[in-house]
Amino acid sequence: MTLPADLVQAGWATEGLEHGSANEVTGGVWRVRRDDGPVVLKVATPRRAGALPHLAASTDPGHFNYWRREPCAYEAGLPAAVFAEGGLSAPACLSVQERADGSVAMWLEDVPGAAGTSFGPAGLGDVAYRLGLGQAAWANRPPWDAPWLARDFLTDGGLGLPVPAGLDWEHPAAVAAWSPGLRAGLRSLWERRLEVLAAARALPRTMCHHDVWPMNLIGAARGPVLLDWAHVGPGAIGEDAANLALDAFFDGFLDVTLLAEVVATVSEAYVRGLRGVVDPDVAHRAIRVAGAAKFFWMAPRMLATADATPAGSGYDKRDVAARFAGREPILRVIASWASEITGN
Image (cartoon, rainbow, N blue to C red; front, side):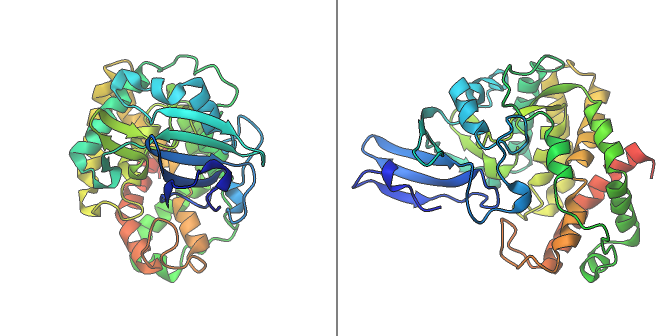
C-alpha cells in the first residue's frame, strides 16, 4: 500500500518501516516527520491486495485475524495497561482516525531505542521477567472485557495454515538438514497436533500478546516497548514466553548457538516474574507445552513451501538449504517439548 496522501501534509518527510506484508490487516507502516515531531503512522485495513490467503482479514471480532483489533485495543487503552505491572509498555496512541475507504489510521508514538533484534540473552530475559510480572496479574482471571479479543489464537491461527495432505518428509532439504529422528518427531507433532493444542488449552490462562518476538520490541529508556497489538487476547501461561525464546532465532536474527542459553534465561526469568501465582513446575511445563502448540505447523509449512519460497522473501533472507539447516536446532527443541505431551 502506498502512503495515504490524505493523511500527510505537504512538507512532511516520510519513510516506510519494515513490517510483515503477508497479513492483509496491515496496510502499511511509516515514520512521518510532522511539524510537532516524528510519529509512526500505521494503517489497518479490511482489504488489501498481495496478502497470503491464510492471513486474510476477518470481520469476525473473535477471529485471530480480525482486521480492526489493534485500533480497538488502542481505543480501549489496553496496550498501555495490560502488562503495566511489569513495566512492559506500548507506544502511546496519539489518535485513531477512520478513513473514507474503510481503513483505520493509527498515529502512534515513535519510540526511540535499540531494536529488539539487538537484544542478547540478558535483554530477552528482562523482557520475559517483565512479561511474567504482567501476566501474573491476569492468571486465571477473566480477560479484558472486550468482544474483539482473539478468542483462541493458537487453534485458529495454527489450524488455518494451508498444509497439503501428502507432506514430503523425505524432501532433499529436510533429509540434508534434519536427522531421521528429528523428522519422525516433527511428523508425530504434526499428526498429533490436536492433542498438543488440547494440552495447551488446559494450561492456566492469562492475557497474551501472541506475537512477542524481536521485531516487535524496542529497548527504550523507559524499558522494553512492545509493538503490534493485532492479535492480543486470552491465551496460555507460557505461550508468549515460548514465542519470545524461540522466535528470536527462526529468521536468523540471533546466533543459533545462543539458543540453549536464551531458552533457559527466558524460562527462568518468566517463571520468576510470575512470583508463584502459578506453581513454578507448572509454569516451566507450560512454556514447553505452549511452545510445542505454538509451532506445531512450522516444519510442515517449511516442507510445503520449500520449492515455492524464493530466497530473500519475508524476514528470513536465507536460501532453502540454509533455512532448513539454521532452524534445525530450534525444531529439535520443539520436537523435544512435544514428546513430553505425546510420549513419542
